[in-house]
Amino acid sequence: MENELFYYGVIALGAFAGALASGLAGFAFAITSLGIWAHVLSPAEAAPMVVICSLLVLLSTFAAIWRSIDFRSAWVFILGGLIGVPAGVALLPLVDPGPFRIFVGATLILYCGGLLLSGRFPAITGKHPFLNGLVGLGGGIMGGFAGLSGVLPTIWCSLMKWPKDKQRATFQLFNAAMHSATLTLYILQDRLPDNVLTLLGASAPALILGSALGFLLYRRINDAQFKKVLLWMLGISGIGLLIPAL
Image 1 (cartoon, rainbow, N blue to C red):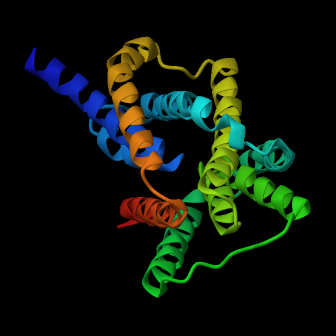
Image 2 (tube, rainbow, N blue to C red; image 1 turned 135 degrees about the vertical axis):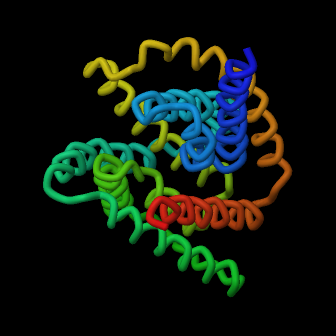
């Protein structure tokens, strides 16, 4: 009985931590929850759970920010991402993604640390549909190859001189589209664990609470503070990518 309570307690704690981070920043569910879930879930269970729970949290906050979605910008990201995912998957048999994750982790730490220490945040003005598509393509390739689809779009949107709702809505829609594509592949390949409904049932209350609390915090910060939140979350993601190598 005690082991069972511990097991489901860890499931709920991981779901709450991931939902809190994603509710606040619009991403980072995986990097926050996996460090907790790894103690009780196998990789075959954890990977689908991250995709499903992250998607649920993203969808739960869309109602509050959907008016800020610029579909003319977002669809270019998504199209590039959907094209890039198969290319990234094709790289898996050819290249070990481990060193690439280490490189991305180190780059994120240096990038985010440098900007936070300097206090100067570069900004991109104007419309750049071609570059948006390239960023989406790069995100899709990184997602299919190393599970890092959201890194490039999040950084790119944070550099645009957009209000925080528009930034978040754009990369959140991109991440939701990538998660939906990944979940579809899991279903078609019959890769969902047999106990997925049980795990989701144990996670549901924590997901709702964490997402609501995270989004409440998001509503209390301004545009400049949101940029700092994104940098901190990206930096923490970088640390999370380096930990397995250490």
